[in-house]
Image (cartoon, rainbow, N blue to C red; front, side):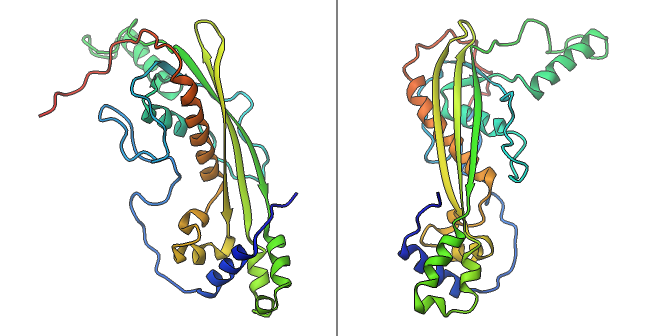
Length: 269
């Protein structure tokens, strides 16, 4: 079933197409990307998405696991290799968990220990056996992705409006409009008991205006840049943010586990 499109939306899109213009290209630091932004660490969550739901205190240590089934639903979808790095950032920014690495960071730790055991590292190396923190919970992401092309539906509506139908090339441009949707899930497992203690789904939807996207974004209204130049990865990131926020509601009801010592930080000047 194709999504319904309102006449006001069509009229707004037509107006955007009529405001075509050329502009210079430039690189803007910190611009672009997805709804998942900023950093997390000893200084707290910085420049996180305003929609992010946070906890006042962490409840446990957490490791993120790659979904064994992968994330590519179809070869025609240009998806990122894994959403886990972005989810790890979201989870750390929220402050609900302390994140332990079970991926590349862990492999680096093992490698350093092997180098120490081989006598390559200095004798007083800070890497030592028995210092690692356990993951008290594991979070597994899952992805369901679908794409719907609404361009022909909009073009059909335009063809029924005489004042728009007669604009040269308008129907062809509007046919490029596509709706993109993503649905995700986050599954939280207690590593002590193996019980799945929480689960949440998330969803996001955007509109890709194709060649008309730049014009639409320049309007600054009717959705602005959030409705232009989108791709599957950005929609998926937004869906995982939505799923995380719903998961936090459940996490806040969990009794906190005994946490390991916090990371050492510098004293403030």
